[in-house]
Length: 580
Ligand SMILES: *[C@@H]1O[C@H](CO)[C@@H](O)[C@H](O)[C@H]1NC(C)=O
Ligand SMILES: *[C@@H]1O[C@H](CO)[C@@H](O)[C@H](O)[C@H]1NC(C)=O
Ligand SMILES: *[C@@H]1O[C@H](CO)[C@@H](O)[C@H](O)[C@H]1NC(C)=O
Ligand SMILES: *[C@@H]1O[C@H](CO)[C@@H](O)[C@H](O)[C@H]1NC(C)=O
Image (cartoon, rainbow, N blue to C red):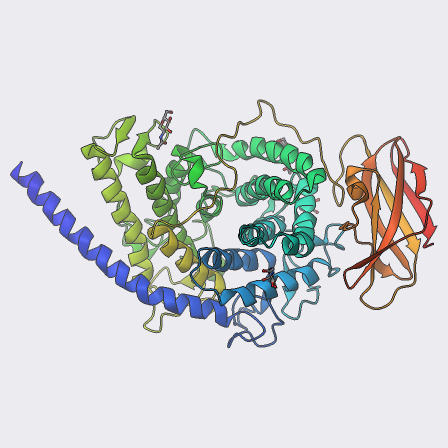
């Protein structure tokens, strides 16, 4: 008894000391991180030279050369900025956010090695910082970018809708979101490169963020009266949720990061997916791998433990001690080192879990999460522990202490300037690879928000039911994909335009946007004056369509009557028209 009491006091005192050291580190570092992040954004960021307005430079580093803008990194960085703006923390961020929206509108239309906007170009991973296409060899496509961008833009759109600015959202944000979500709906079941740009297969992070984007996209479309899009996004979201389950490895108790790649599959990919799909209204739901779900907690422990003995800086510290973690244990890039954003993601997942347990007033220990919880109390058994129990207090106190421990590792290896590179050395913690990585800074800001109990938006994860059998069919949308019962129809129209004017297609089918005068089916001018687009349409179906011109927000329709045709039974079809 006396021994236990002393142990408890000692533990309590050291946890308290760590907690206050971490609080004071984060108070300073979050200011540096915010400034460091904004410094990497054009046009006026002090380290963003050459970047046009609204463009996020991945890092101001020439060796390795990170002076590019990645769709994924930019979306994650702006999601953090948008959430801060939406919480009312800093109204001056609005200018940057509007510049980001304007930049993405341009970037979406840039033809690149992955295709045009209507033929797969949205899956291009990175662009030059003047928004021209990057044409060198690269791991492309990467299909998480459009989903993450849609999520960031929807978050901004929702905050503007709350401020009664819906018409602006409909005219300026919805068209961008629709392009990205139509791409996700049509292509989620195709392989692509993972977030580390190395493995070409299906990837948990990509699938998880695609699911989130489609769910919140359906709600966003509904809020904006864009009903033609809702069913397609909802159908594909259910299909994606079904596929998402397949990454779970029940015998080893972790989420396998990639279906390809020939590695263990233990990867920061899965903790990052959990924090970027956190929805506190979903509780500890395991179907969406919420941060406090038994599957995500079990996976987190397996991932963290895989680094204990491989990095010298970890001195083989045993569980539940916090250690430096990297992307995945087999990593060899720059010698394979811990990454700040990976170690911070572990802390953030734990802070997110604490938010839900405290809100629900209980936590569950299941056979799947038992090993995770036994790190903190070897005597704990499967069961539900209310917040009034000693077990709840013991576990949540120890987990908060472990979460702070991961931040304390980052603190230990932060130089006195507070600047954060991509990696810190596995042997001595010195900074390595690109300096001032924008995503490293964002990872500080999102973890602080979670530690303060403010993280997570309701994106519709609560109460979802996983379909009993997985399907890939029912594609509700057009560009880029393909599914049974559809044929690829190429529309070509000869039309002379003035600079800045574009030609769009609209017509009598969901895939032709149901005669929408704000159709986002923009034609490519690659063979000007012939404009073209390929759309997947239902086979053997009589359809009508028109081309429209949009210039400075003004829409001009072709003259009557409507163009009419019947789609072929299978294969492809080309229609050749002249604007009239
Ligand atoms: C709506 O939001 C946009 C983007 O920030 C802004 O330019 C516009 O002035 C807002 N309109 C209203 C009515 O608040
Ligand atoms: C497509 O979906 C099916 C059904 O979930 C799944 O078995 C298959 O692995 C998926 N393929 C890709 C590349 O996503
Ligand atoms: C990625 O994998 C797909 C399917 O296996 C393959 O068709 C494609 O060529 C691969 N891409 C690259 C760049 O290796
Ligand atoms: C614990 O499990 C019960 C029964 O499955 C469930 O109703 C409750 O929401 C769970 N609570 C948490 C915090 O996961």
